[in-house]
Image 1 (tube, rainbow, N blue to C red):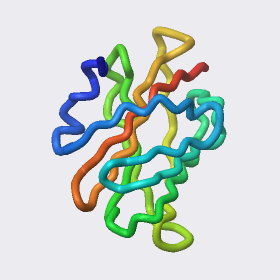
Image 2 (cartoon, rainbow, N blue to C red):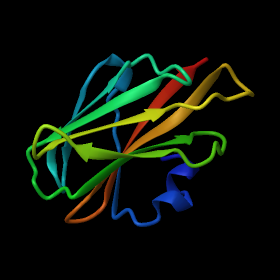
Image 3 (tube, rainbow, N blue to C red):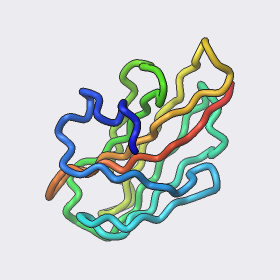
Image 4 (cartoon, rainbow, N blue to C red):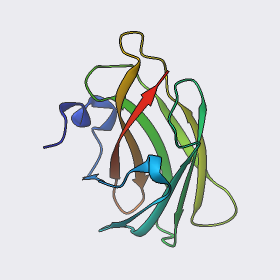
Length: 134
C-alpha cells in the first residue's frame, strides 16, 4: 500500500502513480513505464545527505515527454513543498536538474518519497523511497 502522502495536493493532476522498488542509493535505476517506455534515472551523490545538492538525470528515448520535475515529500511527516524542474540537456530525451533534501530537526534519519513526474501524453509520477541522514 502506498503511503498517504502520495495523494497530497501537490500531485492532484497525476493520471498514473507508479511505486518503483529500485534503490536509487545503489546507482541508476531503469524502469519500464506503461506510458513512456524505458526510463533511466540517476541521482548523484547517491548517499542522500541533507543540505547536499542532488543532481538528478533522467534519460528516455520517448519524445512525448514535454515536462519533467522531481519532488521530495516526507514519508511520515509534512516537510513543506520541495520541487525542482528538470530541463532538457544534451538533446531530446536527456533531462537534468538539482534538488536538495532539507534537514529534519526531529530525526537524524528521515524517510522520503522521491518523485519524478513526467508530463506529455498523460501525467505519470514515479515514486521512490529514500532515506537521508544529517
